[in-house]
Length: 262
Length: 347
Ligand SMILES: Nc1ncnc2c1ncn2[C@@H]1O[C@H](COP(=O)(O)OP(=O)(O)OP(=O)(O)O)[C@@H](O)[C@H]1O
Ligand SMILES: [Mg+2]
Image (cartoon, rainbow over the protein chains, first blue to last red):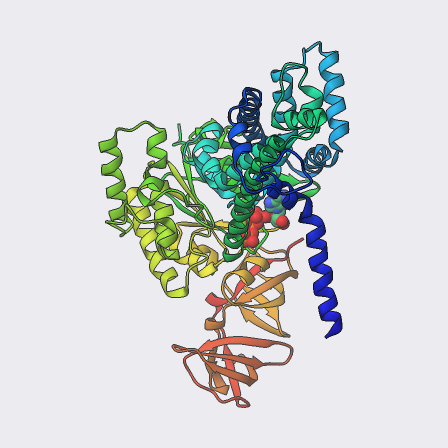
């Protein structure tokens, strides 16, 4: 009895510990006071101010442009790469798979610095283009990882059946393989979109001076001093990312159930 | 000039890594022929079919189609269609779209596509199924759609890889008859793969018996059944009694320490041979007419006949007979010369 209560309390404590910062953040984004220390009543004025702030709106615009472009491109590249890897055999396949894992496991800061060095070396001026290139690159492996399982689940004779009926390999990919692996592609695209919005470190190192997305914006505002608008902005970002992750999680759960049914 | 064959396989070999899966295969297939590749699991039937379809390249040798070398040509450029082992219908398309897939690629007009798909569905006895979802169909129905999807392209050759393997016995028998009818009515060369010898014998014009990547015998079902060329074919096709014998001279063979008259000749003197006798060719007779005497070890009733095992001196005979004998009874056996098949031993 006692141990059961203890373990409950322990679990509760862990959750408090984990979620306290975010809860405090959300509560104080509705606080009618400039200071963080005391509660002065409920307000949504920080949110209204947020949407009047030109700088913030511009970085929201950048964030969306970057996320949409990079998730679109990385989804296309990742899907074709996954089909290519699926078609490989033996050692080359293993090699390609491991090569794909490496960027996923690499610490963000290392990836970020390498991008910066690479772009400097290539004499590319840091700006929106470089940030998009970097995002495409780090999102692609995740797309590959969400598409590959769908390819493995597919009846491997479907592509052959299409070729048999006169389809060129490209037509077979378009009309048979892609419709079959569509759920994996959509999940991959959502994941890429989420990761792009979520990213700070790589964006920070590849953005240059003129461009800032929301995460860079929050960072520079926070450096200038405490500001309740940051709370409101962070709350909105948190909820958006939470929502996206929830959708991705639900989708993969559904797919797993389907796979088990078969 | 002699009429060209629809397909010639010339010195075909296939290796997967170090495994020799097809060993120097030579085979021709004529127009409108129903040819079956028959053999145990792993003997290379599917591999042969995949090489003809263009899904696999031979390590050595050529595939010739109507006189033209097509080795290395991709599948979509071959006038050959395939019915895959597990059908491989497109699950995201309905019945109509599945069958229309090849016609759309050939850019046929919508009316023509519609007409042909309807005709095909009639041919496979599924008229009115156009809008149905693939997953809502039974195994037998999916099977027919797979055949319709291939046949609608009017291929010169249709490849079928164990198309009835997943069906239950009754449906299988029905589909065997239907398939044979279809083949005769559309006049297309069928290359059919099965490991079921009964299926091969009932449906084919020509049977190719394979084992370990080698062709063991090519012939009509009757030839293959009645005149197996070696021990493997005899054992694989139907049940057999196979005995070691010695060919004393023409028309005289010695086995089970006894001399028998046979119809075979042209062997070396005292050549060691395999003697094959089918279970239904061993007659049960009275002692005075018998060539051998034995004791019935067990009897099974099989509907039309009884299956028994009869022990003689050195051999247990498999016998199918309409005469019922109790286990333990003493019986006489006789084999007429026509039913004794003498074969050269494998080297
Ligand atoms: N892609 C491959 N890689 C390696 N070995 C293979 C490959 N495909 C087939 N084999 C091997 O080749 C041999 C012949 O296979 P095949 O599929 O042609 O046999 P089969 O006669 O069709 O048998 P079954 O009746 O079981 O379908 C088998 O030993 C198999 O393991
Ligand atoms: Mg096979």
